[in-house]
Image (cartoon, rainbow, N blue to C red; front, side):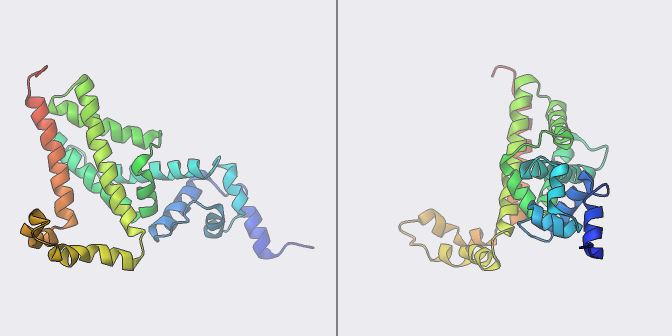
Length: 231
């Protein structure tokens, strides 16, 4: 039986026109729409108009695709950082850009909170942070430890924020409202600290938390750099 025009087009697309870059771009488009199936060959096949099995000609498995997509996402964050910034401004810019892309592609951002891509853009991120802490005055093991502190903290925070977006709207609304409801109604005798600042807790924003976290990281590097060696 002769192939239909659609089948012929699919077969053609599954061949030479399908590239790793096209697959990564398709995964990011799906992820940006908030879908959790950005790395299934079925969904990618639909997005690309290609035979799903053709994905495996370019990526060994789903995990290799995830790591490649995540590294591309890191590149997008890095490209948003202006040149010529001092070390503190570079850390702040990296933090802001990392959060922005994680919220843009939440399924990728949440998955990468505990992963390492082992690819070029991740190496660029590591180089940026290490360069910043060395510019601040840290070397050797101190630079390595404080790089990890910054990198792991940012990954954890942006991953948490991205994962939150993957919950359904009702679950997110219930969590957001807890500060204005359940926390305001706690027993003041059992939880005096909570009761004492329940109003203030309800007013804290995600932006304030993130800014405070980033500034605490920078302050820790500054403090350590100002401490005499061996102290």
